[in-house]
Image (cartoon, rainbow, N blue to C red; front, top):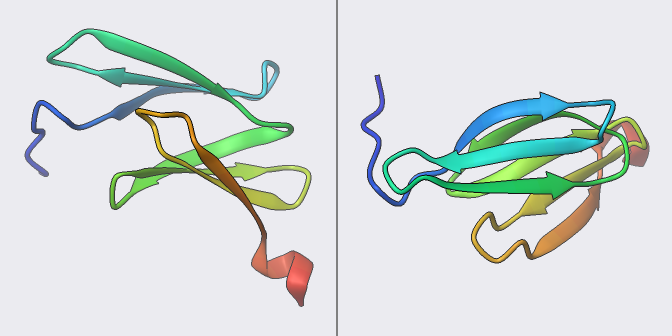
Length: 78
């Protein structure tokens, strides 16, 4: 089991109807909602929130600032 530090975000839930990912910082009680078109799956990788979307894009989001980058998925570039 990974150790959670006070700076870590966790994914609370993914709502594909709202096209949203809900994040939380457990020890600080901070919550954030990140919306991207077609969001249906998400995970955290090296401190970045990665959201897969039904539109064929993958979004990389910095959870604290909300800054995001849209990338084409591997299937889209093939």
